[in-house]
Each structure stands twice: as structure tokens, then as C-alpha cells.
Length: 458
Image 1 (tube, rainbow, N blue to C red):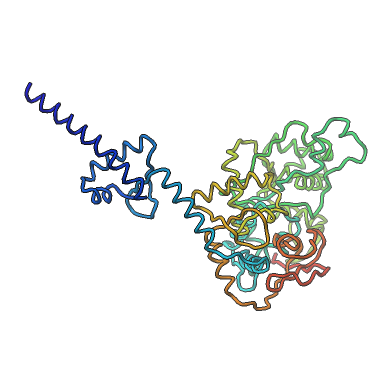
Image 2: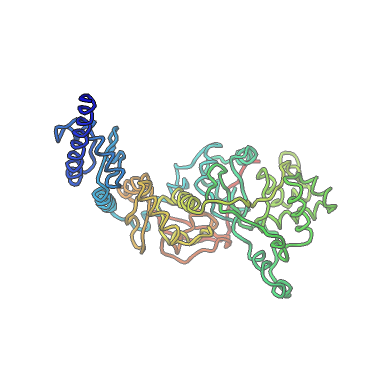
């Protein structure tokens, strides 16, 4: 009995000691900031084990948080309200560290960021993948992607590199924004039957984009209900669409045989479905076959001669799987940050993501709280909040110290960097105008008709 009483007494004393240590630790944490259990133990001359026990009790109460707040290798502890105050002050300091660049300086930097300035081009298949990763989600005319966009960013661009990326499943392509005619087809019957209603017209300037399959969380599901493809498409296009829906990915010959249509009719039907955003293909050469009238006519000799139809399969583009919208919004923010380095509202003028700026703003603030992006005033002359990748902040800061060099860069009006009238002063140049835009030190100096393509190999 005496031994039992001693044990109970010892436990009682230990409990009293723990209760005494608890307010001591609580008081010190209110003023110390992030600290380790061992560090606090040395300060108050108590064993680290007792400090650790008190910290765990405070964590259970929700008073303190644990983490690696100051970059230490050991776990640190900090009082919750003090940590929130430190976080706000840190964000304020970070936002004041960079002086805003002028729009011309930002545009000059952006030409380098997207690898179109002299000496910044990418190379090889890896370079094509990097360019697509930076431009994914941006819709441009189908006939402009290789000769006017990718070839400007990749030195000695080889179309076979794009084919390999598509055929191996690393990259996909298609139209993601809804075609106006398909939107009309979802209206009431009276509207759909109205004479002169818009139709999906096959065109080489149909907008398409690329996406890296491993990073496609930003692609929101695109559901097609029965009849949604209705009046905007021809009967042949609907027949090919239903064939692909029933049979899955199919070769061109299978579709010709399965639908009983002429090859020319299936070609036109596929072109309509591409323009509508319903189908894609294993390779990009499938699209080239539709874009090139000589190939469709079976013309060409020697090295220029190519098969009339590509060997890749055609399939439906849309996804009916559900997705986490919060995750998708953060992924869209990531895509925009990779494309522009700095993101603010005006930069979305030519983007076709089906989201509003206010939704992206919430996601960007969340990324800033996690330390993944920086908030602040990076480009002068624009209202509202701005966010940037840490790497872009440092790069833009270094760019401002480089003196003007009269550097000239000429781009197509279809290029994603056609930001005249958006970021830099000037009259907006329509994407389909066929004009060239010349920048000198980040300022637009000339718009010339007669678009000159960059020739790409076969």
C-alpha cells in the first residue's frame, strides 16, 4: 500500500508540474515567435521533453502551430495569432521589394520569357515540349501554330518532334472553347430552326490549343448531352461523331467504311468536328492532312509527297469525368503564371478559359498564402492585384537593369504575345488580320500586312 501511495503521489506531482509548465510555455510563445522545443527549453532551463509535452497540449487546444517557419531543419512551434501577424508583415515586405516595371520593360522581358527574342530560342524535341507547356490553354488559329508560333520559339523547328510528342501521349491538341454555333444548338427548338442560324464551318483558322497530358488538371470537364451537337453540324459530321462515340478511337479508313460516306465527306466532317471542339487525334499530322489542300487532293511529288491521310486515330476530345474545381482553378493560375510570369486582369483579354477573374483572384491569393507565388505591384499602369512567380520577379528585376539596345522582334498577329492595346499602347491588331507586329525595346513600332511564315521542315 505504501508503494502504491508513493506512485500515486509521484503521478500527482508530475501532473502538477505539467500544469505549471503549461502557462510558462504559453507566455513565452506569445512573444518569442517560431522556436524549437529544445531552444525554448534552453531559454527557460527546463528539459526539452517537458516543453514538448506542453507544446502538444497547446497544439491540441489550437493555440500553437508546428512547422518549419524559418527554414530550420527541426520542427518549430509558434503561437497562432503571432504567426498570422508575422505572415502579414512578411507579405508586405516582399511586395515592397520590387519596383514596378514599365509596360515596355515588361513586354521586352516577356519576349525573352517566351523565347522569341534573339538568342533565347529553345531547341529540339524538349524545346517543343517546353514551348507547348508555356502556351498550353491558349487558342490560336490552327494554321498558325507551327509556322508562326512554335517555329518562332524553337530553333530549326522540326514538325516530327511535335508528331512524336503527340503519338507518345505526352501532348494533346483540340479546341476547348465552345463554338458559337454549338451554343445556339442547345437553345429551344424555335431558335434552332430559325433560317440563317450559325453553323460550324470547316476553316484553317479554327482556334485550337495544345495541352500537356500530365499537367491537364486545368481542363475543366466538357460534357455533351444527347442532342447538344444538333443543328450546328452537318448530317455527315453528326454521323461521324456518333460513330466515334460508339466505337471509340478509330482510323480514317474505319470511319469511311463504318459510315458508308465518301472520303471527302468524312474529311469535311472531321474538320467540322475539330472546329466545333468535339474531336482530336493521336498525332498532329492528322490535322495537317486536313489543313493542306494539296494533300487532300493527293498532289505532291518526291519529298513533298505525303500520304493523303495520316495513320493516327481520331477520337472524341471531351471528358465527362468530374473534377475538383478548386484544384482546376489553381491549375489554371499555374498555366497563366508559366505563360506570362506575372498575371493581372488585363493579360486575360485573349485567354479563353471558362472562368472569371474574381475566381482566379481567390486562387492566386491562396497560392500566395502558401508561398508559391508573390503578390505586389510588378508592372506599372494597371489597377488591381498582380501576382508573379518568384523566379519571374527576380528575372524582371534583373531585366530592368539592362540598358535599351534597340532590339527588334517581329511576330504574327496570331501569336500569344500580340498584346498591343492590352499591355503596351497602340491599336489592337486582330488575330486573323494577317499582319506582322514589330517590337523595338518592348514597344510596337510597325504593323505590316503580308504575313511571312517561318518555313518548317517536312
